[in-house]
Length: 299
Image (tube, rainbow, N blue to C red; front, side, top):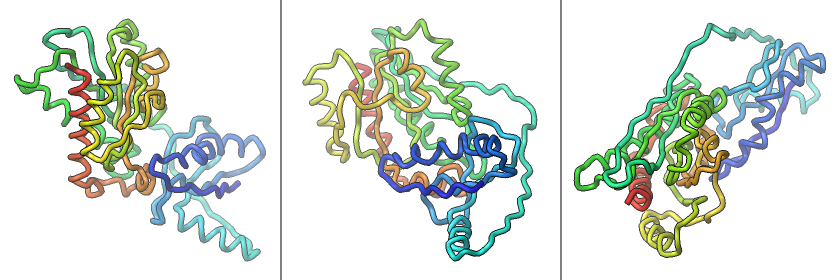
């Protein structure tokens, strides 16, 4: 079975959801229908000869592979001409044992209301084809870089700032769910939570799902974000990020600083995900935006 559905580019990466289901469930469905192997066009938007890997949520006993977009194009050209296509697969993949991974947590304790906290972070794991620079070393670096500003004595926040490098996001948000379960009794003390997990492109908009903040607070925050080229999207339009979703589902207030992800899926889960893809100016703009938002939440 071959699935040829293409992913399209979008600043928010919304094309991902339209095609990723084929990767997560396609092999199992194909096997149930009698297929001996499963292939799909990579879930990505690039034209490089790098296939994209990713999670299969439903395991299958047949061989399953993703083709780079140029290779998928070639197969489709041959089929369109009515030619017969024969594919030989050599797949060396499987389980090599189990390992216990860990969330890594740091906290800057507030000096007036330490029980109240803002939670931010990114995730540690990657698909190991490249170095995981954009997915998600960048997110860990951005949020950590922002948090460092509040270690200075003159910037010490009133509330606590907790930075979490979540483990095992790629296999199904397992670190996020583990954290939410272990810290469920702290839910009422969460002021806001958010994650950076969409590369290192410049932030272009911000969204919130916050209660208890008046029009003046939003106006002041807009005044900080506007010079950075960041527009306000709305106060009912986000879940805070992948690893924040378990907390959001329990009722935690959240925000999201939306990065330009038009090229994110060119690199996502490929050998092309390397440090040279991160632009210094965009990374710095991210840190500045996070500092601005945290400043509005922590004091």
